[in-house]
Length: 210
Ligand code: GRF
Image (cartoon, rainbow, N blue to C red; front, side):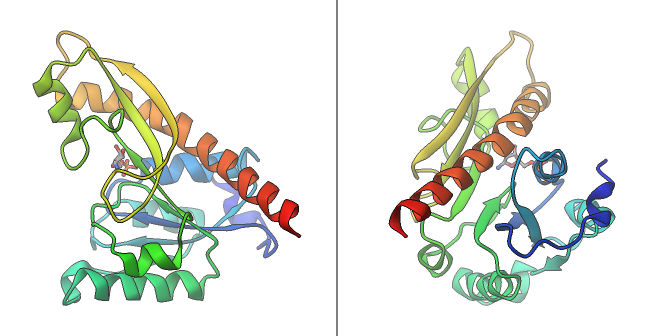
């Protein structure tokens, strides 16, 4: 686990990342590690989670990163949840939103406020196997190669512009768990890399237009 995050001074001039996560948070951890290793030039301003028992909360706590619980069960609609997310992101001056195992569908409330500024990682080679249970779907279909995809978030689920992909072979005796584990390991490589590249792209676009 990364430990020197706490010792770093808050660097307000760095792009601020807001992480949305519902569960384990291993992708969040990989991103935090990449930041500590100076592979991503940014800072994680806040982690937002929607399940009170999500392990990601403990991970964030250990790293001294603010973690905010927004339990979807407390909101009347998806839009209401997204307004609360938006308020939190704005409170922490978030520039780029990173969905890392966020198990809620986001609405135009959030997407239009952060247009082209929300990234997601999906455990298949999109456009194959969008939606839930992508690993199970790949096994059921019998594909020999699957993988993971980093993409921009648009209102159509798992359909935004693809930023990065990596392939993972399906082995004859794979179960959802074994295949998922290998996909996860690859996600931890490509997600930080894709974030770093996308931030460079944003910086380049900004400096060309100023
Ligand atoms: C990852 O497999 C990601 O592709 C999917 O949710 C999972 C999150 O894992 N969207 P973790 O919480 O980052 O460990």
